[in-house]
Length: 527
Image (tube, rainbow, N blue to C red):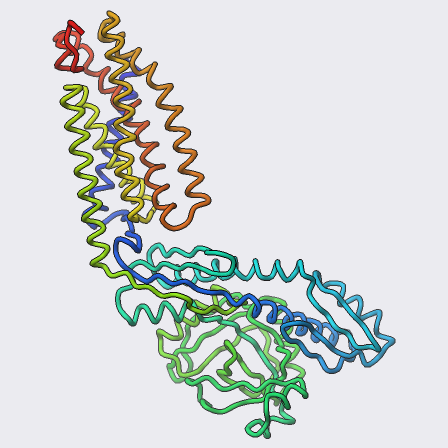
């Protein structure tokens, strides 16, 4: 009995130290773990983004065309008229005897249908592959946006899918118009990096050439970026890129010889090989660095470029270069997005929500504690102490894991007050029943906890499972509610079953000596 007493009381004391020690710094914003406030409590930006999944399909066709073009050149297979759009990839095989070797290349591409007629090849994606690309575009966009916002330094951004092709982004803490614009630019930037060859034979006529004429030559006309050295000019590029940003592994801000910020990028082994082979075969020709459909530079290749690294320059500010590096590191958005809805939540509205929630929490706590003390006397006081410890534990655990407190989360804490005291009510009633049956105080406390624990465990475990499922499959507000209720359930088990029982066992000798049942349990002898 003594060993059980000591262990339970020690656990309860440790829970008090842990809860109070970590929750107070968090509540008063001093050093230590902190709880982040959600969008509905501290204000911020709410964006609903629409994903243009058709562009992801177009990008896939472009990637297929680029790969076929590269592999065919490696195998000395002559192709002509390579063209890709958002419906197919088409080209002509000039030497019919190479059909077998070309088939060996094409069989490595999954999810495509190949049609041939008079050495003219047309490749289309299967319906199943198209659906897969669309789903992947959504999931990749969510992952990429999260990565960018994490590196941007925002606390607990929320990025979730809404509907079939929409994404809901919530950014707590965004207060100024400048922060809002920077965050929107970072989210919406496709960061699609491409290396493209300049059509040196026809580029002199680019200012008078139409897009339709350029397409006839397998080219595309792109403008220079506004902050590049040749802003406002156009350049004629081969439509099939040499390589794209899918092969990029890192991007960092560095400074050039003029001490201006530029973005240095590194390619993977495959990208480095393609980059090296192309630069070696095209010395004294130009290669354009294209980002999101705009040319940032088109330097002349002086020698073979090995190592798989390069730089993007364009008169960037330090902030612009940093944001571009973040976007490139986190990956390109294979499908561009558009803002469907923008809503700003002011911090004053968040303060009103916090005030209303605190009134509800304090009011509920005071009423519950008052009822427990009046109805159960000293047992009610013990239950109230456990309830206070329970609240501190919730705050402490949330602070340790850096959880976000939302308005539904505040509601979950209020609900947890009721759940936690319910366990103590069951225990006290079971103790009363044992005392009325003639058991001594020590035996009554033991039977009360033994009989109540089964019901408490059953009800709390099922509630905990529900909270876990809500967190796993819920979004936004539902997750905030699930976090606080889940933590609260675990804390109530520790405080109600383990903590208060250890406390009772520590003072049992004193209770047995006084024998004032009404003082301790709110029950008179005649009951």
